[in-house]
Image (cartoon, rainbow, N blue to C red; front, top):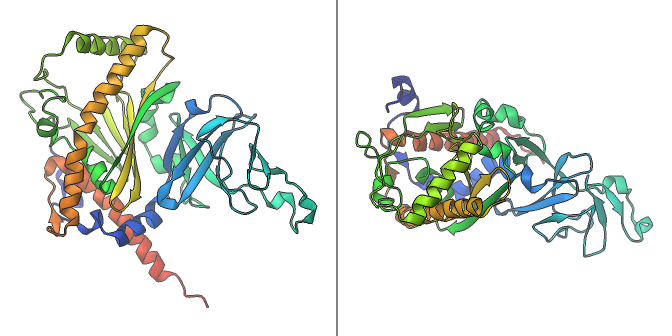
Length: 394
């Protein structure tokens, strides 16, 4: 598929510089310009099904830990996971259910709403409890996905930031999910290289010749039927595929058959966006397919290291052996496929970071990669310009 001429003119066709993909100074600008002031997906409401449930998420790029709670009023709140007495980590667990949170250092205790409710010998302090609550973090939900923003005063609310994206992802399985399975892997590559790998299909017939299957004869590279850009976000409509190069074994055929059966029962095989593959800026993929209902969250760890979290969201519990088998089968099948990407991404980072190349080239069907680069770089440049305009204080 070709984009309209004006879209190509807007994005350009020039080579893209390599230094943003490995230099530490550029990475630090990305953290400041993007990750500390943009809405970031951090969890799902199915992790907080009842009042008192909480989850804790590390954000290594910000050297931060975030505590997300659901109170008796069913409101979801987010805080820095930091005791306001002396800065100790408040909650060491990844998840659980509690009415209050007590710091193990000096036993300061906080409620689900972040208020300080008790502290030993507090009358000796020179401050009131009302001034010692946990530092809150902006939080909101869309399609069941929990987002936070580390900016104390975000320029945009979540819905405004997402633009037209909610009308798509609200039709996906993730919006109705009640449980999930996941796998996590660290990868020695810049986060943008990971994002780019999962935005283009040019590599499918080479990297995934065994697991990805054969593409349709009239579209041998499996290029998307349609691209669409919505501000910094994007969407692709996935094409129909041909048969696999390797005949599935009976257990594999059974697994795929059950996946289709359960997706059909949940009403996920059709719909206006059932084949859409969405990229929510800066680091979240959401797939509308009822047979592969996954998200991919790419977390930057450093200029040369990233973490990928794949989650498969399910509606209903594993209430039968066949449903459990189908879900486990899909997760493991997709894990095998995604594992094939890792060496290619790491090799790319190693080559680019060597300084051997000053530029890289994107072809017309890699236009989401070009769009993504411009979305990142424009925010970095805007941030740098704002710093230069900032008045000097003495």
